[in-house]
Length: 332
Ligand SMILES: Nc1ncnc2c1ncn2[C@@H]1O[C@H](COP(=O)(O)OP(=O)(O)OP(=O)(O)O)[C@@H](O)[C@H]1O
Image (cartoon, rainbow, N blue to C red; front, top):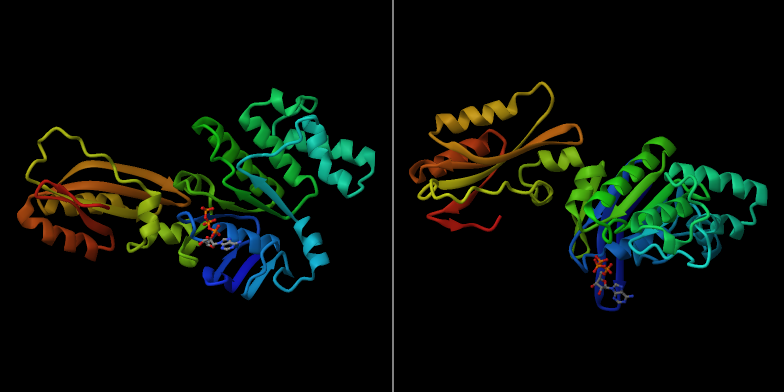
């Protein structure tokens, strides 16, 4: 559905993107993460055709954006819905009129607009609120109007740039649920730019980590979290907090991350390996991400067996690093 092949973009002497290759399957949600300046906005610009790559190919919904003429790029832009952090609704127009706007631009007949707007209000859970003005809506409701407006022309692709960064946790969860429904029920392919790992964890099927304009990691969530060398996996699953009650003084703490799939008793194997090595579990989390289960443990071991324990767990295929040694925390 979306592919970037060796895409590069330079602004004078600044390289914003270098050799970026990634793909997003139809009907899935892909996250783009990376620190400030990593090239996320430039990448989104390449998808919408607003930024012309210096090299490489960008294909969205079978159209080569990078080669399209200005006019077809404009047409393509209508095939991509956009949702932003700040919704930018017309304050003087009702929610319904805001949603209708892209359809009016396309000169859609009035009767069809009314029908489509009613449908969109229902999709985003705002039936009955069409006559409200933006000032009468909460932040989450405004974002729902923004999503409805972006979907008005039935685009096959939705680009969401930090869509939940301005929202509280509860509202974020409900907006993410809505995006998931839009993907699953309407078949819309969604690319979501975010700095929040929780967003990736909650709704993305696949993810790309950009770093200094390059793809540092890309893959499905399962692929990323099953890779014991992945930095992104460790960012996706926060380490458990260790109780600070002194009984672990003198012990070495190992940070152990493992994945298991239904029917594989990986967690039990890790626990038994820890027990055999004379260690114990100081803290841990266990959660489901995609179709895999991920555990992250703080394992306490006597200092004289720490090296042996680390090597043994690593050989078993788990991500292991020292978290605290001689009372000193190691940055994870
Ligand atoms: N129009 C431009 N002219 C010159 N340099 C630019 C331009 N746009 C972006 N850059 C540079 O390209 C690099 C990537 O910028 P970009 O905005 O794509 O990063 P980002 O990951 O979106 O950052 P942020 O999260 O802060 O928005 C940065 O070094 C930026 O300064």
